[in-house]
Length: 232
Image (cartoon, rainbow, N blue to C red; front, top):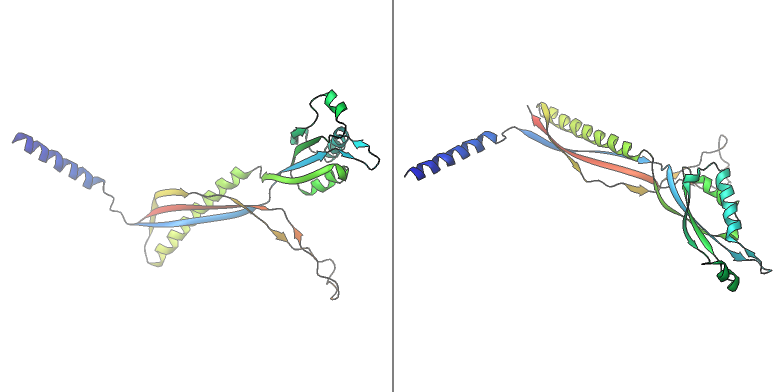
């Protein structure tokens, strides 16, 4: 009998405690959003150089091509730390080079640029026949984390403004934040186009329409915040 009474007391205590922690406040839940497009200032470009044979069977060496590229990089004011060798396909040793003079060595480099327009200036000074290819490997922004934090705050502020607007519309007042959750977000590159500025007061009617300048892909940041606010 005592065990039954003790169990009943414990059960009542548990239910009483559960009732005390039950949140009965009126709340409103909203989602705030913020987005921004950023022009990358860290663009990693891959450049591949390869030896080639001229019409008179003379080989243009990878050393000569590399010297041309390195000279152009230095002239463009790019730091040594932003110019790196990525891969090499070359002779294993001197004797192999002597035995197989027709083998064409190649080298791949990674160049970190702040402005993609510099790439044309650099590559144009290198022997065009020795440039196998160029490609954009990746890109980012030096202050990307700062932009992310700023947008998260803007998304939260947007949620607060939205909640306040809705409550004001029905004659209610908003209290403090009860819960804040960041919704998973990813940033994705988006191609952007910039229209050329017209030169002169008006373009001639019979002149062909100017083609738009194509900007580099933008980094599009988009963040959402789920927020719950108390209704007073």
